[in-house]
Length: 86
Image (tube, rainbow, N blue to C red; front, top):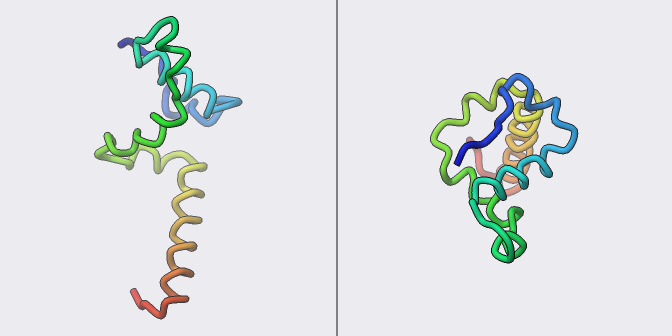
């Protein structure tokens, strides 16, 4: 399925990235009519990372870097609370 994807350096300019992702998933599904109406892109979006082998291109995006940093901090607080030293 041919998808109209933005260049990575323009991805953070998308006003509603979640809606754009859901539309891309609908297009990629190839479904039409009733089957498309029953399609739930929010469920399929959760599985995208299962197909990714390399996240390094995303590390050029400020939003992803912020997410990754926030996640590290949460994990470190959790490990500290459990007295697990890394």
